[in-house]
Length: 200
Image (cartoon, rainbow, N blue to C red; front, side, top):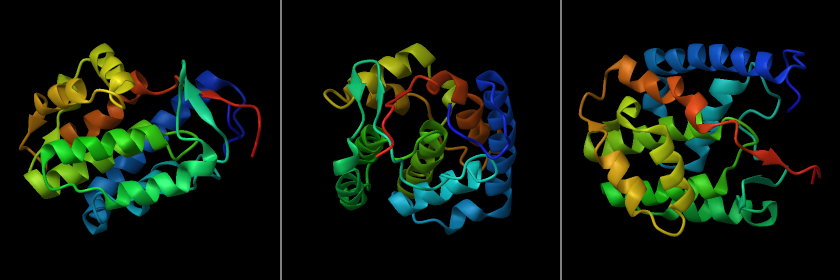
């Protein structure tokens, strides 16, 4: 369990506090127009989203992780390649749905933060979709198991995740309830990561 500003030592208690605080911050981002000022599709914007969501909880909010992380047998981008990977992702095109999802998949492989990647990235994804194709994902229409399996396979075969997300698109892009579903469903997609002991 990562150190936190709240002084919480129980992982379940931390998860509850993190969910409550990050949801409140997500609403603030939406209502204050913070998101409208970000450049869609850049790592810098993703880091700003992450910092906004988690700065009350973690010192490392908005900062690149300093540990290698994995999920099951899948290892996310090793530290030594992480910055180069993020620079390459910034340069990827994002003018069409397929390009946007390919960029999302690559950012998931990079997994730049120690915690909270999924929630930050879903907001980041919706910013790109909103700007480029006038849609966002309604996460309530995305089955959790299907999503997890599709994301696990996406670095090799991204057709499944494209299919899932394309079928969950909505043009109701100014609806706060739809926006918040990406945060509400955070428990579906996170908490699966194993941290390596070494602090590099």
